[in-house]
Image (cartoon, rainbow, N blue to C red; front, side, top):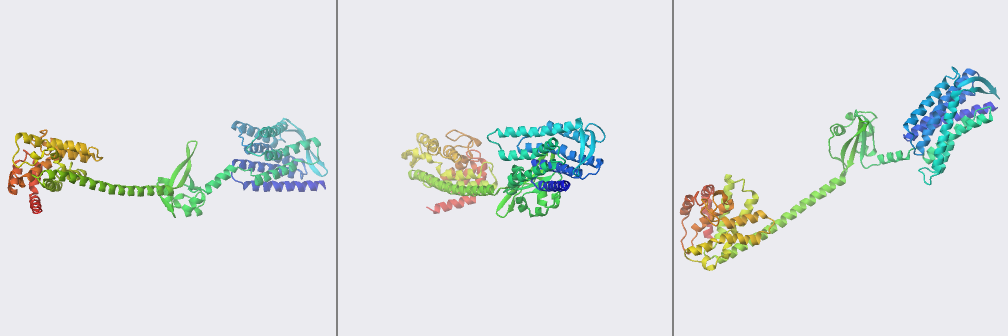
Length: 564
């Protein structure tokens, strides 16, 4: 009757052990889970040994069953200690792991060869009590080492438990820690009870049975597995970014849900499939590190390849598909804002330029209202300047200097070339006859006075190019190519180009226009005078161009006379 109870109960313990192996295997693949899984396998081996032992009918079978028990027992205690330390967030030193692994392996070797020497068992005999077989043993030094090691593991766990209980705050609850320690220690307690009370059957399988049930409870109800690992997996699968992992041979190793959404083909990929056979875009991103935008619906993703290295060796890659939608939207908004701003600035600039032109024309009108002798001169010279500049551009002359901004500025500043006449007395400015030497000296000062007026009125402009060009026009338009002009006697290309251009058209208009002190010269005569002054008073290159555009100039002269 007792035998049947024992054999059935041991069978139940063995079944529970196998179930524990399967349930442990289904847990999250963390370090604590792997350790517990290995420990469960070795515990099941011990239970299997006890199941065979109670059914043995001879000494040889009984010794063989005992060997199976020690295969499991020598490793399971160490693995449970390691599992307990992981659970308590403690780390066993590597040297300790190696040392205990060597000791456990040595003990297991002694146990497996116990019938070949006297180190583990000095003597063994086959016994039967109440129909239950067992082995009567006289222990040797090897078995004593096994007991010392087993008790050491339990004491070590007990010390850890006491240390954790002494802390006010622990990462694990006190109740859960005590339950786990009791479960792991129970097989040792039952083993000691078995030796002290000298039962006719083995108590250890029952201790293992209760321990495994307790551990399973902790695993499924409290979460003894690595919660951080589960949290990482949850975060991995719920990321807004796509993540794909491959090994160094470009073989598929895994991806999250977002990566499958970006690349539906990944849903059918099998582990270790070559990425090159899955999707050309993915392969291009991984191998060539191609950066591209991947639109998915209203979202935009951009890949980044990161290497996975271990101890200096390449193991694979993580391809991270970042959601750059917000960044693209910000860029688009910024671009649109910049375009709108540029448009608004251009409108305001145009308005400012319009105001500026009106001010300049106002200046010119003030000058002409005082200079009744040269009425219309400013308008006509500005017209001739425009025609001459067009001719220079057409023939490709002085193109290095005649930039679009330079041309715009000279056209705008031309009306101010005689602004210095505002400082000349009316008696001289409007004299009907020729100037005396003294009067001429006063009139010559209109160049320097013009530069001074421009300094005082335009030097604060942001457009410094316009300011400098207007000043040069006012100051140097009476300089001559041969250096005999005024106010500084500059010669050749020392004279600014804008002033050389103004010199030609200024003299031309003065000659073709009637003045109180002289009649107008025929256009043919004026062009002859301009040609004769080539290289003397005027820049020869400008004269050649002026003569070339003679038809346009003559036509404009007639138009301007008809407007009077």
